[in-house]
Image 1: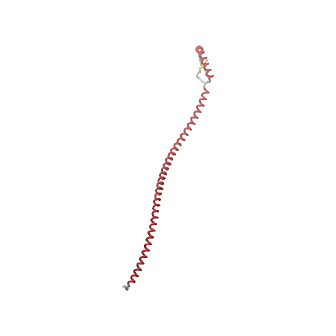
Image 2: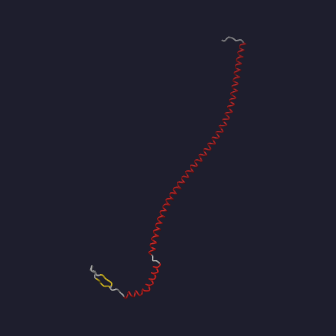
Image 3: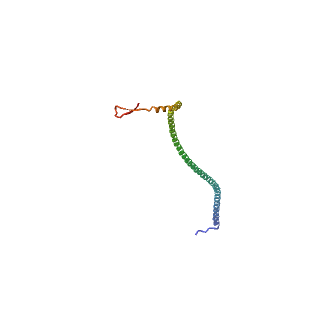
Length: 180
């Protein structure tokens, strides 16, 4: 056991312990106040950061909506582009078909022009073979003259019957008839 202490020593020692504990309590109280200040300061910072995070979340949500809208517009534009390309392809095919048909029609037109030229030339050749107005007038006059002279020619024909005689041909043995 420890030697016995006097009351004054025990009191001094208790006083020292109390002063020590009081200093420690003051120090701990100061630390607690400092930590409370830190907590208040950090709480304010945390509140500011929470507000900033909420603001950033709102901005992020807005950007997400914009991206979704832009994606939809992009998809619509792609669909419109594809539709336009299909229309252009169909129109290109129609143009090609029309160009081919035009080329065929031009070829037929050239053939028809050639036929027209040939028919015009043939018509002109036939036209030159037709009797002229002078020839037609001469034929009418001759026809009228023959009509007037027809009875006289008929009479002369009946009165003058050709007489036929047989003639010898030197090279052949068969006789040939000759008009007298």
